[in-house]
Length: 231
Image 1 (cartoon, rainbow, N blue to C red):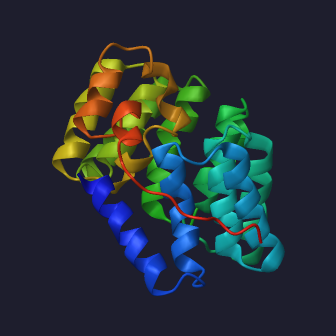
Image 2: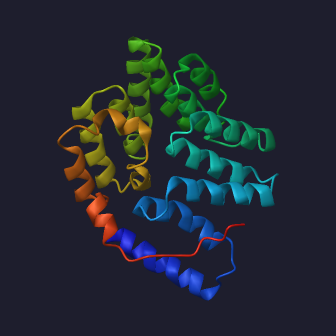
């Protein structure tokens, strides 16, 4: 099991140097994936890192990601804006910011942010989401077709959540199957990604999570714990 292997990796890293910041910081989203860290604890840790290093754009980006997955969209967009103010060329940050705007109902603002992203592939991922939210079906179809033509292998997970956001469950699960085939690393965040919310009630959802080892009962069996510093 890949997650069990990751748990052993973190344990070895922390055993080598319990004071090193990188291992505990990486352990935060991992603990959250396993369901061992509640939202408030995760955000408190991310906020502590920002307080200690208030000019670290990566810290604000990580905080924004945690806030986005926690459903705190206003806070997430503020964190991504701060990250971009510190590092304007930061790839994917505009599109993550746009995701927060989309999920709070600001499709026009989301599209404007997506078009500013310095990463071509993230612009291509973001456009179908924004076009769908704006009701621009033709543009959405064309943008999604362009993404599939450009990067079907590398963006299978993203294509899956675009279809899920559009409410097209069959296509979403077909692309999730491709994401498994291509070993897409994005799958690790599937349980937290709100763009999949539309297919959570589908009878295929939990079996798929079980197939990739991310169902709640499977995560509960993985032995792993770590003390997360308060500051």
